[in-house]
Length: 227
Length: 250
Ligand code: FES
Image 1: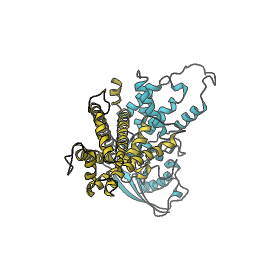
Image 2 (image 1 turned 180 degrees about the horizontal axis):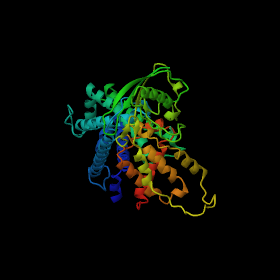
Image 3 (image 1 turned 30 degrees about the vertical axis):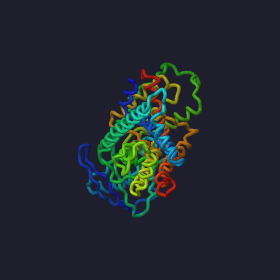
Image 4 (image 1 turned 120 degrees about the vertical axis):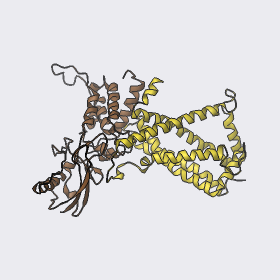
């Protein structure tokens, strides 16, 4: 544990923490998307899946216990990820207190790398809204506890809500793309023979998550998922 | 050709700086960028004005003394080229150029386009020594170095510490420089005994000097006149991780 804390002392160590928590969060985002694909199998399959999330780990864990453990790990990962990001961004502001009159932004590898901070903030705001919308239900017009399929369909039947969900997937895609590639770099997973596939893998990961997620509101609006 | 220049002028570290406008006339396409500034400076001196101060030494692209921003790019627009090796044939008559010093809190402006890059020297010093037996010259080939490692170390050792990576980086990070220095000894057998203490010391000094962190933008690699690759930063990251977990004595 002392070693983990001592990582916090250096910029590189903080990035290792961000990469580690990033892996956890990428795992969540991918799993979340794949799990939600069950909505295409109809109301029963989807509600069964939603209920199954509570009972996962039984009989070793009691109902909801493993889910809570996962939630706590995710919350901690989000907290560490954001704390490290805030500290590093403030550092970098100080490191270039006086800016350039002219700066050639095209020197950087990608648009994605430049939008990590803003993208991250948008994603954070979205996650809060998304939890209030489809988990707690207080931002939902007709929330029924225990009927995830109903909440899903009626939630996405609203055009503004669906458009907001779809638009947020754009910064999420960029964040995943640069985040995944950056994670490999931060872990030092560089190998001259493999380096050329790192970006395509990052792009594929981001693309799959974004397209999968966008398909949900689109399917509801198009009437493919409904009653 | 005739060029319009906006040059950053600053009398000293604590002073306010400002852009001054100059016109460079009769610029030959065969001149290097620094020679063009030399001509402008001669005119300034003839007028009784202070010449524009800029760093330079070899003018052969090997010492790392020269360097400033031209229209937002370190060492100007050409890849793998220091500003002393940038020739005016890359510009057109009537071009307008903004010339600024490297901007980083760790690199205070000494005068005009000259910045204090001694933080880079201190990062190297923090890396310390390597353990070698002194005395009579060792037998050649006593320590076998695999070709791949020798190449890696040589490529990393190409870094001339000009500071362009820091200047280009949106975070004013010196990680490309530090990564090159860590790799250059870390890839060789002679560098192994202190490998993990060295990376920790160098990264600590890097951070203490007030450079930003690396967010893998890659602007450093684009700007580097010596083609140092961000892969070296990956190696540094891996070495630091191993230093913390596998070799925690360091
Ligand atoms: S003056 Fe030596 S590298 Fe340019």
